[in-house]
Amino acid sequence: MMYSEDEQICEWAGMSVWREKIEVKRGNEMKKWNPVERALVFILLFVILLCGCNKKTEIAEEKEALKITFFDVGKGDAILIETKNTSMLIDAGYDETGEELLSYLRQQGGQPLDYLVITHFDKDHVGGADHVLEEVGAEHIFQPDYEGDSGQYLEYREALEMAGQQPELVTDTRVLSFDGVECLIYPPQKQEYEEEDNDFSLVISMTYGDRSFLFAGDCEKERLKELLNQTEFDLKHDLLKVPHHGRKEKNSEEFLEAVSPEIAVITCSREEPGDNKVRKILQELGTQTYFTFEGTITCLYDGKKLLRIEQSG
Image (cartoon, rainbow, N blue to C red; front, side, top):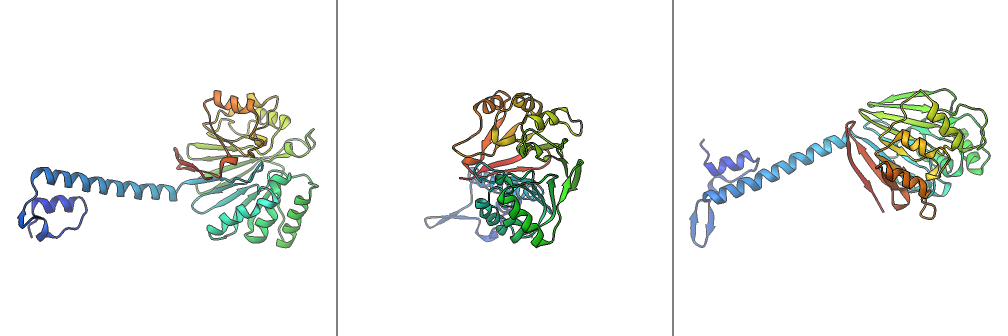
């Protein structure tokens, strides 16, 4: 069966047409599309088809992407890493912000986390962990090898006992691999620090394809020195979770210059949005800096580039 020139144009663009009704009615007369009209229709349908193809490509890319969510939990850390088949939560914010995490996890189906990493036991990092363990749970739990003394830490320990789980105490470098992600958990190198909690922070260096991400807990001066001196991994990363909510240390500038991130996230409150000197150093490095007090931050990476970054609120 033969098709008219007009029908071929529409068929090429992927549009279904009535072969007998290509003509356009104007008044009581019927006339064929003239060349200009056909060209305009061709261009319009081509654009529609192209947009549809691009949208399908974007959806396919995002399904395979690494998703990093920095939740707005005030001056605290709650960071969710998601791939196609795996989820990892780094810290769980405060006790009172646990519902922020749970609401999101319920929307995702409420399945147990594959990994829960508690970097250290300050209340703004471990506070919501008991709620997460009680409602969704976690297959594997990692924490530093020291004892906390806060009420939130004790609630976390009770939740572990109720779940019948023992966390892995990270005393040597631990490497995890999942869905194309390489995750290195770097433990504190000393048994005692001047700063009793923050410098015990586990540090997570993560790579996905050509992109790299560093989550530096609440590291202060001594722990930053360890990071600067270590040879376990390259300190240069594309994305940095700025240590200790943007607080300035004597070696902060050296550390930030060594990381030299394209994107930095400061987990902070509106009242304490990080030290001005830290923000200035990042600005001079050309780093794009985000603050969680302005809303939850979501980053999508395909292993080669940043697909998109969004901030709610």
